[in-house]
Image 1 (cartoon, one colour):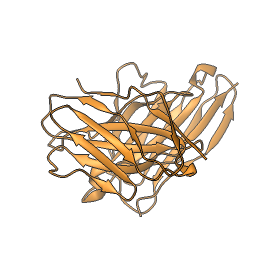
Image 2 (cartoon, helix red, strand yellow):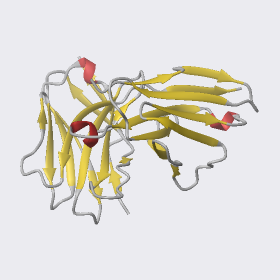
Image 3 (cartoon, one colour):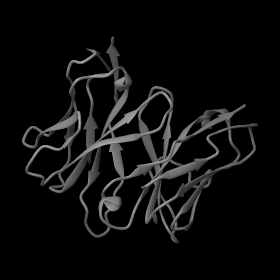
Image 4 (cartoon, one colour):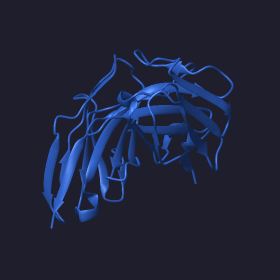
Length: 118
Length: 118
């Protein structure tokens, strides 16, 4: 149980275009979803926290107009990188937290999406 | 502000031996949670073990145990009987306490790369 999927697993896009990454909780309802970015050989940096039906809370230094987050349902959150540039190339990982019990204690991570902007 | 420190960028261990990965933390919150995750080269984040700040006993999960020393603010991961498949990045993370309005977000350390020698 507690499986989180991400789609796509990898994407290559041209500079200036937008790309959408989906994060789904497959077998539980996710009250909260988190989006992280990880550059090579570095740690995970939290970008934003999203709760279903409300606006995302962005971490300091993360441009909310560039990284659009939508948490439309209890099982789906999307991250859209708008007007992507090569410096946005990174590994994007989402995680989800459930509503009760152990699901609410841990964060369950998706497999990640590797974005390359050319 | 909360902070997680992992001072070992890389560690070697001989197969079948035990290894300790260090993690220290800093928080003023009396209630918090500590996590260890394993990230193999595929990029997925694998949950290993959790320790709550009020837990009386050290957490154990199979070959993983957490040496929790609250007064020293350390939460070291001990892996017993190392296996070749244990070679990966290991991240220590902290979550603020569960209370009304808590974001449940995780703050990660910089990670330790463990290599298991045959």
